[in-house]
Amino acid sequence: MLTLLLPQLAAVEEAAGEASHISPWWYGGFALFVLVALLAVTVIMGKGRPHS
Image (cartoon, rainbow, N blue to C red; front, side):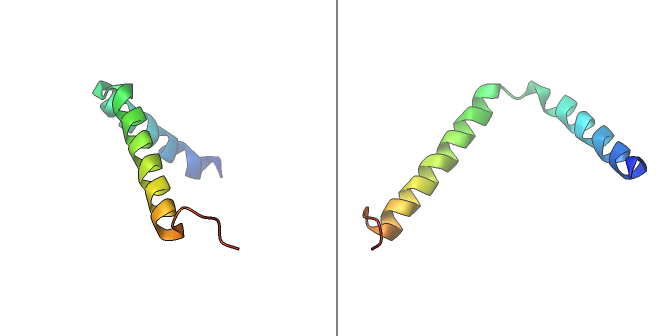
């Protein structure tokens, strides 16, 4: 099992090194955008009220 996980771990570390130039603010902003979009969809689909 270790032989399967080791190459994937190396690939993840390499990708993290390549993405290190991206500011952490972009990750936070993207996460905030996704959460707001999901909240908006929830409110729109549920018309703002819990289903009873």
